[in-house]
Image 1 (cartoon, rainbow, N blue to C red):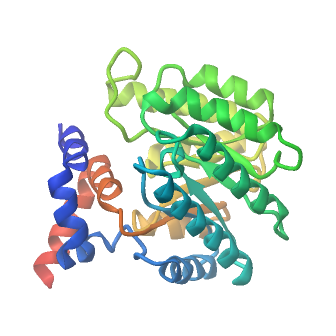
Image 2: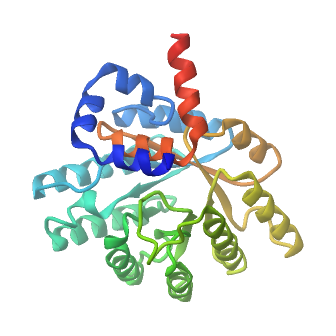
Length: 308
């Protein structure tokens, strides 16, 4: 119920407009969003790198409404890649196709993302672009494009995608991605989907996550396991031990500002960990989905507001 409530709030344009324009909204979101400028993301990334973790940087936004907005988003990502190189950050980038204009002009979006992947591939050391997954209407289009990008000369090690464990189709999608050695970020999923295509019960989502996780871990390809679920993390660690998988054969992935105690413990115990760092002015939908995923986040924010 709580998750559905916050997903609906994330889709409310009036609340979004108020929150993203208010100083209170920006203050509340600062726990989970690095800031509004590239420099904010760079500073956050440097701090995370010093703590022994790698980073994925994401400029928050989705569903642009015209080509100019798409080109502006692309230019910002070009600057992020340049900042990664200039500051020698241990970081890659994550983007959404609708933020690059997929709903406006599919060819433009393809050209933009192809250019970003090409730029990342030419970096020294080579960079990496994670094409993020959105709601189910975009699943097949996103996967088709990632397959296409991966086949382009020079791109093979510089592009990957995301699979959501709550979708019933995900095992089949993983099989196709693994057949082409495409790197995958496995998450549970943060969008509201109908029961016909997604597992409605948390227990079923968790079981499918573990099933898919084991497939990825045994694939011989470097994947990311995105979860804050300690039970699932312990299962991954036990599976790695039983299968004699090295700690550097995969990575855990967690969100900026969430379970920092667990993040530190994973690094201390010798596991690889990547932190997803979002920044930008369009933070409201992301923030509301994070609150819906974990009720403890709501209470954390409330406690800190009362202390102010």
